[in-house]
Length: 314
Image 1 (spheres, rainbow, N blue to C red):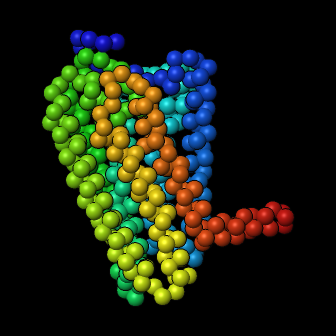
Image 2: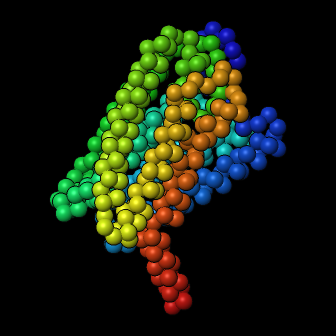
Image 3: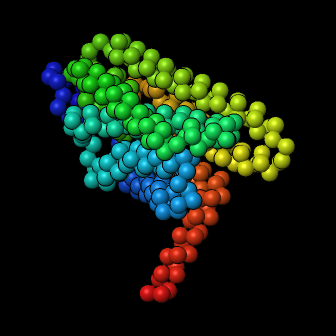
């Protein structure tokens, strides 16, 4: 399907494997991972919504992060798994554009939410007396809406800019979902300005958010280490460590996807990097928060006990 003389009307996504049996096996493994990640995020959403003790800014942002993760993992994995099962690699140009928009939007919102969560932890630990005033519900909603609105602008710009290019050389995307770097490689238009704008915007936003998060945690750790009671230090670290793990995981995976150019042909390395970026963070985030967070575990136990009691009464 290379050296096409007319503009493409559809794209061909990369298969999980050339062997049909392995393709089905990988598809099922992907779907099981997706199901586990989706259920984990939905569980956190339900727990932080039902339990009134968790109606605080920190859990408000954790709930929003879980919503984004559930949507993020749903954009790429189910379509790829279904396509593999029915042996269909085709995706329309509109479907590809929608997927790129949603992936870019979710990634942007997730990273900016993680930045806002660093601000929340900083105020809670370094300015505890002013915390209810600074992080009041109105401010939390405003910050979340700002993340969503700027994410819409960012995703709309890059999606529109990408599909201004012509695709007349090949319609084969060496990826199991549509993303901007893969489309840049098969465009017959001049791609330097597109690549430059993508890298520049990603670096500016990434460096700014990373610098803010780093500065926040430097102040947090310097404050926590001055706590006279070891138990207070432990509690402070227990709320910060999961966030640091999630930020590191997302940054590392995003760096490998967008700042390292993939090979011209599909490779195991490119596939693994894409899986690490699009599946692993949303899958691990609920595990990290639920295992490291005592309040979420206690709230989950209470909800399970209530369900058991209701079943026994019924």
